[in-house]
Image 1 (tube, rainbow over the protein chains, first blue to last red):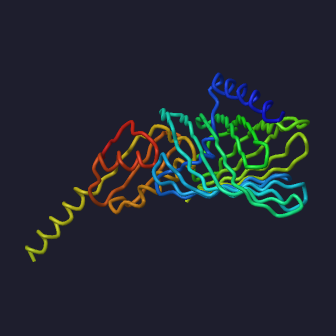
Image 2: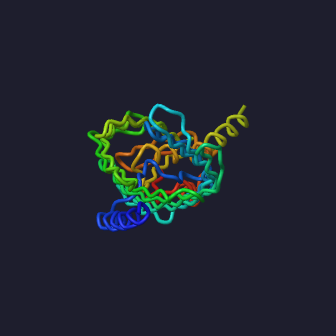
Length: 223
Length: 90
């Protein structure tokens, strides 16, 4: 039921994203510059997500992706640790803007506890697109994660951000961002989260508080 | 003495001939991570003595201490994932 509903809604999201020209967060690109390293961490009460990657060329990156799902206040009991390959499928470089489409494929291990500790193969696929200039930023991402015994987890995320002022990269950049995320789970509404993003040199941090009362903290760096 | 002066003059002249200020117009360079990537790539070049990025103008200004060709610059910008709109040498 969840899978069918997820697939239908996922199609709607894709069509809406295509129609609006939305795409993945440029400042959270899975592929950086050649020989560049990156670390990203997303944290909310029910999920921790980590991505550490090395970019081989400006079109290909390999890395490790981790998802830890948990009940609020507990340690993650459902963990996905995956090797990831990300591809920059298309980039549009304009004088004052940039747009991208990325595809990600990952495979690895799901470790979980349903009375006994178990491990099984797990896979993830994502498509992300983005467009931004120095004042506006949009992101759209759809993903599906599947392991042998669990229902597929579908997720869609859309973001729109505005910079209240323009700053150089050696100065503090600030963004106000609105994020809509849906995991298509029965009885669970999409989560709307306003964020404030602070960006200085190669460090980026985001602090959000969703309308359903969850504190979210994200961190990214490239080096 | 005269010989030393001539050699010093020649060295100084040839050094100045290689040292340049290069202003590069870069398309797609809109965020701090973009600027950081481009800065890192140019700083890894022995010919480059300083890099200054201005996001507002979409420009990267290099001070060089030895020759850096247009092809090298294009390759570095492409490796960082961006496109060149102009190269001006001063």
